[in-house]
Structures are given as structure tokens and as C-alpha cells.
Image (cartoon, rainbow, N blue to C red; front, top):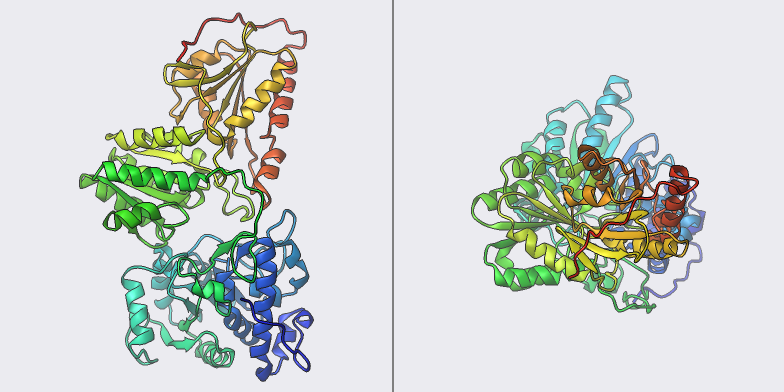
Amino acid sequence: MSAPPRDRSGVTDLAALSSPDALRDVPAQELPALAAEIRDFLIEKVCASGGHLGPNLGVVELTLALHRVFDSPRDALIFDTGHQAYVHKLLTGRIADFDTLRQAGGLSGYPSGAESVHDLVENSHASTALSYADGLAKARALSCEQDRAVVAVIGDGALTGGMAFEALNNLGGAPDRPVIVVLNDNGRSYAPTTGALAQHLNLLKFGGGIEACRNVFTELGFTYFGPVDGHNTSEIETVLRRARAMGRPVVVHAMTAKGKGYAPAEQDEADCLHAVGTVDPATGHPTPGRSTGARSWTSLFGQTLAELAAERQDVVAITAAMQHPTGLHPMAEQFPERVFDVGIAEQHAVTSAAGLAMGGFHPVVAIYATFLTRAVDQVLMDVALHRLPVTFVLDRAGITGPDGPSHHGMWDLSLFSSVPGLQIAAPRDAARLRDLLHAAVDIGDGPTLLRLPKAAAGPGIEAVAHMDGLDILRRSPHRPLDVLLVPVGPLTQTALDAAAALEATGLGVTVVDPRWVIPVNPALPHLASRHRLVVSIEDNARTGGVGSALAQACRDARVTTPVTVLGLPHAFIPHGPRKELLAQAGLDGDGITHTVLEELAALSPNGTDRHLALPLWRNP
């Protein structure tokens, strides 16, 4: 349970801390009580709105010390990955905004330059802070501003990423550039940190690490301070002041506990309440709400993969520090030796999968759509070039909701549609997920990719007919073929809703699910040629996705039917509810209907160019 209300008489009030300057005036003896009040505040607000709870509870004292020692924004504070910046937001004048946390138009769950000058890096992809710090330090040196500190706060989980090691190599090799690397070591990213680095950090923490000892950081040219108690503000302050005075690259190794001070998080060994929806603050359990009874796409994938792994000994799985969020835990429980967590290292995950495929296995790489974009080169050159049988399953594809622009999986189709030999599928329902995953793993001469949304899977949608690998889901009887709707994956039901509305206006509508959306099935341009208008519908950027590929395929086949591409705008989309953001992009039933009517009116105001209806389908 959260801590009971405290007697705050004579102690600095959290609401009075409108800036870091005010924090620096707080007497040291009042800091423990202030930290406790911050935790109470975070538990109340995050449990009500949802968000990253455990990571922020673990950095309260550390963030207090950072803002007491360094002068933000003159000194640069960079948080990696950024989801532990809630305390930083509180201390930089945004306490009144927490009632809008992660709501549309409200406070972002990550640093945001639009909110505050104290947020230098809008950072929510891991392992980047040290590279930002390296570049900033170089800029400060060139500008003769080396008195302005550069501080990068990075977790031990994010430190497993390849970019972090690349940056350490550069930072440690420049002894004249002062950068303070604050290693927030809680022994985990989303899950417990794995690999040799975790073992090395544990040796430093529990094997008698001292400032003068040789370790990976000192060998790379850093001065090392630690390990220090990350929940003792005075101790951290003292070390940070010493680090700043060094005038050279320094690592401050702080030991913290994820979920510190909140019993439900401390007892939740799976993820320490890393990210939560709305929960009961007394228990940490989700608050009751309306349930459709539908399972998430992630859980359906996890169950299907575990069943597939039981049938096929060659199936292995790889994830980048997100075993539970991507649904791999059912397989990991049954076949732990065949599930590999490589840490926050998507590039390594992909090329490691290539090696597994070369060795005769079929790897299933489960990664968020927004994170696989970090490994485009590896997909292209390490997997596809070698025609290796690797299956990528992209969770959180499309609009994800409250995590905002860095987490929307809206570029995967644009980026990966250009990879030669890569076959991309988008299941419309649970049955198709099962079919397509089995089909993907059966493909042995090249890579495959399945994309899944952050949503509950809806009811099954059966085909009314089939055509050369295409599923015909709706066709208007006894009417000319006016409009062909081509939805991608979970937007299928939305397209069916629009089809019903269009039929009510007297139009003839066909809805087709290509199942495998890239490369374009040659039967699809043929079907398009029988209609007046084709409309593709996808929750990917409009540029370069399925619609663009379909339009190109129609041009190549000399099909003159115009193709209208509906998708997400060429922009960074802010955080907000998935349903509302899709509607704003015109990807709901009303938006699709409106677009079709406008396009048809522009094509033929008098309705004189209708094609003849031809018998294209065969019944199942």
C-alpha cells in the first residue's frame, strides 16, 4: 500500500517547488520527507492516468540530487530512455499538469521540448543519451563553453544497447571533454538485465567495488565513482559535485530499486509495475472497467507461438529486453532454452537471428514496430540479402496511443516494403494470425514479417469468397463495381463499416483482405481494374506503405483505376487515444465513407463511367 499521509508541518511543500532554483534552497535534512511526498504524488497521479510508475519511483532521490548540483537548462540533463523523467518534470514547474498525464493535449509521458526548456532531448528510444552527450560536449568545447556541464542519465538496461558502447568508446577517449555519465543501476530494463555487462555491474555492486578499482569504465578512460546509494540524496550530491569538479569523463554508478517505496511495485518481480494503465493505488491492481472479453493481439500471438514451438523443434524466439510485452513468456516458460533475450539491442537481435537461421533454425524476432526501425540495415543486408528464413513479429504496429510520437509504429510498412524478398502480412483477426504465423514459419527461402496492433482482437471475419490468395470479405450483390476497399489488418472491420454506409447510398462496394500485403498480389491490380475507384486503408504513414505499393502495382499492370491512399499523415503524431487518433486521420468508418464519396464525385459528377460488373469470385 502507499504510505499514509504525513505531518508536513515545517517541511518544504512540493507544490512550492516551481523550479530547480527553489529546490536548491531546501535544507538537506528535509530532502527525505520531500522524496516521500514526491512518491505519494506519483503513485496518486500515475495510478489515476496510467504511465511509467516503477522507473520513476526508483529515481526520486537521484533526480533531486541532479537538480541540486546542476543548473538546468544551462547544464544539459539527458535522460535515457526518458520514461523516468516524471520527477524531473515535477521539479521543473509542471506539477499542475500531471492531471493530464498522457492524455490528448496534456503532459507527455516522455521529455518534451514543447513543454519545457528543461527537456533537451525528446528521448524515448533507448541507448541514445550517451551519443547526444558526446555531441553536446564537442559543441561546448568548440564554443568555449566547457563550464556548462553535460550529464547523461542511463540505466543498466539501456547500457546494453550497441549505441551506448559506441558512445562510451568516444567519450572515454576524449579526456579533455567533461561528461558525467550517471549509471542508474536497478538491475533491469523492462525485465532483469542479462549478459556479461549485468554480471560485471553486479561484481562492482556486491563484490567490493571501490573508486580505484579497474573495471570496464576505467579501462575505457573514465574516472569511476561508485557504487553509491541512489536513494541517499546527500551521498549522491557529494559524489556528483566531485564528478563535476574533475573536468573529464566520469561515471557515477548509482544503485537504485525500481518501484522504490511502493510495496506493490517492489513485490512485482515481473516488471516492478514498469508501465501501468489505471490501477488501484492501494493494491497496484488494474481498476475494474468494461471488458469486451476480447484478448489482446499480443497474448494471441504468444499462445500461438508457444503451440507452434511445441510442434516444431526448429522454432526459436528472440526479443530485445521485452519478453513479456511482446508475448514471448508462454514459450519461454515451456522452452526456456529456445528463447533469447539479447538486451536493448535490436540491431544485434536481427543479425543474431540471421546466424540462427544459417544454423538451421527458424527464428521469430518479436520487437515493437517502432523499435525494429532501428535495425533496417540489418534486416536488409544481414537477413534479406542472404534470403534467410527469419520471421519478424512487430507488436504495437500502427497507432499505439498514450506513448506518443516515438512509439507509434507507423513507419514499418514504409521502410520494410522496400526490402527485396521480404513478405509482409497483416492479420485481420485471431484465426488469420494463427494461419499467417504458421505460413510465415513454413517459408524457408526468405524473411517474413507480421504486424500486430496494440489493441484487443475483434471478432472473426470470414471471407465470402476467395480469389487467387485474396479474401473477399464483402461484395454488393446486383450492383456495378464502384469501390474496392483494401484494408490492412485490424482496419478491416472499419472498412466493412464504411462499406455498409456506402451501400446505403446506392454504391456497389467490394472489400478485400490481401492477407499478405507486401509484395502486392498480382490478382489485386486485376481486381482493381474492375472498379471505378480503389481505396487502400492502413495505419502506417501514407508515404511508401501498402497503398503506395498497390498504386505502383496498378501502374505496372497498366490498370488505370485511380488508387486513393488512406493512412497516417506525414508527421509526428502526438499522444492520445488510439480510436481518436485514427479518426483524426480519417481512418474510421465516417472518414473512409466521406473520402470515397468525395473521390467518386471528383471522378464522375454525373455517374456516367461505371464499369460493368464481372464474375470475379468463387465461393469458399
